Image (cartoon, rainbow, N blue to C red; front, side, top):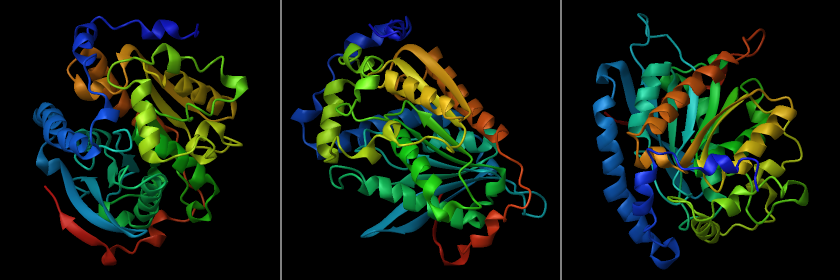
Length: 362
């Protein structure tokens, strides 16, 4: 039995919802276009309706959408900037690049839009929210590459949203978005593009960091939640297998499994949030330990007895309220770890904002 098995003991406030969730649809038996439409037309309005009353005043932030060229097309990013930007208009903020969750095949800019607006104002941080292309329409690694391109675009266009990377440069995501964020942090560590503008922190909410069929022998005795929580509500082992099929990813693709990277040294400070009743629980816990043992500063918050993604479906329960509060505090912790620049080149040197294509949002 996993040493973390007790974390699967159901939270009493979450327990009444489990019977309802047990009747969840089998993803493999339904057309993906139907599932995506239901997500957009039913789930998103429900979530946004809950968060709408908590939105900060419109005068406290600015919203702009931009088109970003990617391979074989373009994607949209939504930029959030705290306002006012100082009496001279020159006040700058740290930057967070956000990758939404949704099992690699659901969601978009609206998935976390209202939450990010709240974070933008509370943490006084500029945010670039990435609308990457989804599977199965686009298999792995198309969505990942979109996010990486967007990260570079964000680093090169900081004047558009009053960002200064010297104050903080965070890559963040939830679930499948956290999976992409973890891979991107490893990529960026080796990329000369980021010399002088390195990522200063990564924030991983309920991350997937190793293919379930790629467990090395040395870790199998620790990665037991995939079996223990195989029938968990909201996201179970069966749904993960459907994701793999739609991603068209091979277990031998080492980049897909950031936990298996040759080295984790030199990665930025990392904040991780993990749910106890989640098939992905143990890999997240193991990843935090590997990072810590590699000299990476880490902060970890665990939510016992609640399922993967619970906070988006039941945002009113106490654990979900704490989850969102911890998200904000995790960002603040990462910003507290930012090294103060000495002779580091200014992040403003690479801006070419005049050529960016902007679409106003409100």
